[in-house]
Length: 323
Ligand code: SAM
Image 1: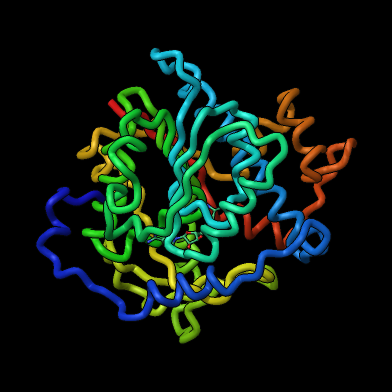
Image 2: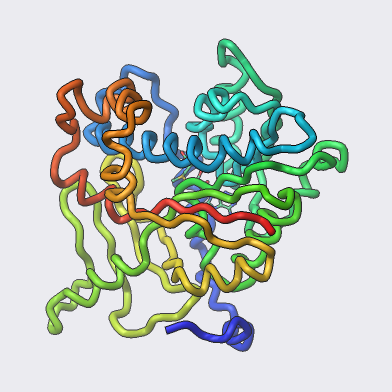
């Protein structure tokens, strides 16, 4: 049920003290592991699959936006919530000219910068900065010169849901996305699927006090059963070997779309991860990419356990166009 866009402005912003600090500490304290240790992760199949979905999304929506830049300058990308720079190679393959990247976790930002500086070949210029991009503008960390040429693509991978703690944060996030994105540019990302999470919550036994579901790979725990606010609808997320019960927020899709429209952003794509898989598994390039990224072997057999499959399928991929 959609609400009027201004509904949420009437509500007091419900800020959970300490949530942001928990998120920042969590990501800052996660050690950067080498390639060998990464390959040994118990959820390496899931991580590879998520990377494959991001590659598909970037190829299908990022590449055309970069190519359609009428100034003929090779493209420019903003990675918001860049983490340790896990998408640098993907953007290198997109043959971009420049990237600006921000994340609230300053340790991750340094790791991303190091990763870029040691990339061989290093195909594009990049600037990295620590920024809470849900409360602060990009102008806090980038100069007018750095922002003069607009972005062709803004990417937010597995991080936008943290903005939905309050309406103000979601608005600040959208302002940062839209302000420096050129008309015709693309905003793409990945985010948990609210419909699915809430449906799973509804399926819990009526007398159950434990409002959690999941399996040995992931767990989601809600605090309340019936209250469904558009902002600050918090749950705790655990992902084995990756995320330790960090607070996240439901992103109710219609509300997100209505808000995004106020920033000139209009949806052109929304798919659950399993749909992205089904639709592209026979695509010649993406099929080969799946083998190269160890998502499956040459026979097409998946390298993920069933429980990992369930965990990846709580996400959706999306793309919006700036008009
Ligand atoms: N985008 C990266 C990727 O796909 O590998 C990292 C994803 S990680 C699951 C989520 C990231 O969101 C973390 O690096 C975290 O620090 C970042 N984040 C959370 N809140 C943020 C905020 N307010 N401003 C900027 N980054 C934020």
